[in-house]
Length: 216
Image (cartoon, rainbow, N blue to C red; front, side):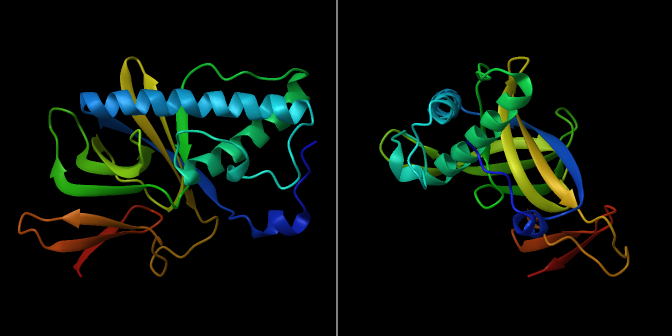
């Protein structure tokens, strides 16, 4: 059975308001094929591990070394967390949930969003690039995906990619502090901007969305 979080663990988890921004992804054919395979493998692994939880078949200290999957190690870690969450939910539902719609998640340390200063009038939002690790068939590689959306505000959290109405979208979750001083506090999240002069800038976003740019 899954152990409940200790009070110490709960105290260490970040507190604050959750915010989710949806970003539209524009993949190449090769990237779309890779992402479809990645997402299907992701939910297949979660379902298998949940079943193993229920059958009490997982070894003590179960880790990414204990199961094989054509996925990056960092993603396999997230699979273990998601499987534990799904298994915990089974007690409330009275049955074992089975994931059917493909999706995949990356934790805050394993994805990066680079936004430009250019706004797309046709697509809406800022043009940018999402960078995530994926398995290309032989090794893990950092995949750069064209995207368009608004700039997330706050500290990075989980990134969830899924298909919605035949389109690929990414839900970027951020955390805003519960109490803050608007004039003194800035987000710890720095987003890389590329100006027309190709100089690297950093966009600093306050929890209320006020922005300031400065050269590095």
